[in-house]
Length: 222
Image (cartoon, rainbow, N blue to C red; front, side, top):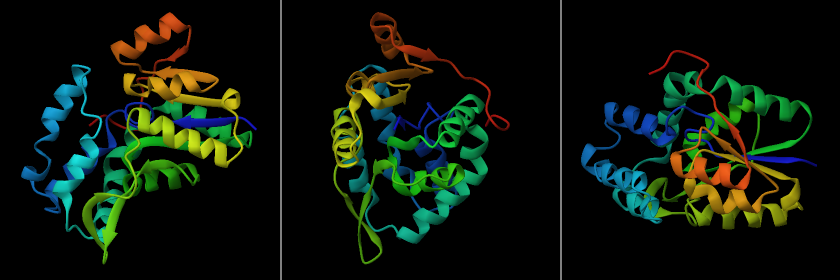
């Protein structure tokens, strides 16, 4: 069976899902700006191709004590208000066509599972690979449950998933916009660069990987 693994941020959705989530969470006063202000530095490092590979784990340390129910509620609002209308039309079509062919589709993203769940529901899929929060008595502990699916850690998690589900690398397609996903792209039999950043674009051209460019989204831009 053909298997399709999709990065989400800037691959399926125009911006990062965390950006949309934080926007809503700040407005609803679930988190404070001081808890996420450091992400501006992490973004700058990412753009300079010198990312902190543990930045998600470090970010979670500042998010201790948040109710799981609040995170889930904000995620639903975030999807309805921002994420859904910012899904690329081309990716919507590509994913739905794969599903209609009864091919396996999952997301492989560094975003959090509670943010991604409404997107899974939108496509009627389950079992995606995403970063998870650890909870104690229904509140975030300040730690992740396992490692984040960022960079080479995404490859490790995806390889474990493929082995568990008897998916051969040659039968797997992986779609991503980011140079940090090159380890998993080169592992899969069908690597696809979607709206690639400059580093991934150069690598995709060099290796002869398929490149897809999408601009039109389901709804109005935001």
